Image 1 (cartoon, rainbow, N blue to C red):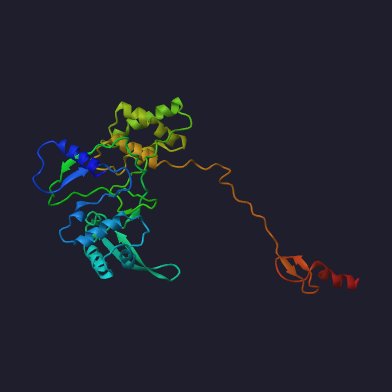
Image 2: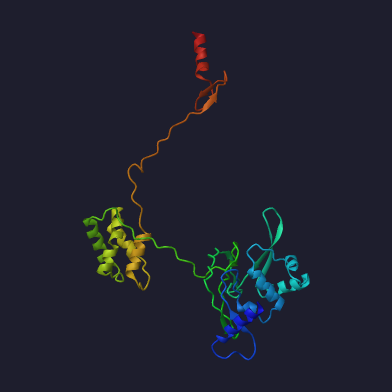
Length: 324
């Protein structure tokens, strides 16, 4: 087995273009198909962290979310003692790779919340630390049929290494990373359309759009713009909006200078669309049924309906019957 390994390594070195370096490490780079973690050079080649702190930082970054990374848990895993591991964790805290805070759970128990940041410099925005959020784990990578052996010299370390991509998780629990500064934009609402675009609605809507430049000189629309925006104005007219109200909504408080008049008109026709006018049945008064409460008779203690306490009908008629 050793002879076969030496032969494969010799062949790989022979395929390296150019002369080999006289000294130093030579990297045999074989692409990973699974179970790997991307670590930034800012951590692996940190100039102020000790080798133990760098190793513990790489180890913590490779663990799934929820793993125990306390001093005793790491001491039971590695040969270094608790004091050495505690000092390495303090180094990671000092350089903002690690954050440990005490939080109280709902049951009153105090626990230590540990957060590891793979790019401390990228998590700072004007001196404020961005709150990390969980992300969805990407799909597992499929191993290629044949992986070539690539031999390349070690790259020279740069004075300011660029940020590395987020590591690919190897377990079901995803790592924790900072959110992107550019959040995805919500889908734009479509231009409103009438139930039926009649010739009358089309003619009136075209006249309103073509005449906007008479009320606001910035809103000069082309014929194609007018044709595209006609359904939006027709939807307003179908909802009994007055042409003057439509012009006022489209020409009031325009941005200066308006770079895209057609986009401004389309946006206002969409977001300022009034609701349909209520019908006669929707404006009808609500009929309420009067419910007379139950009372206990002061004479016979029987229940009867009345708006105020007193005597029932039988007790009120009893003196009349006695007199008769």
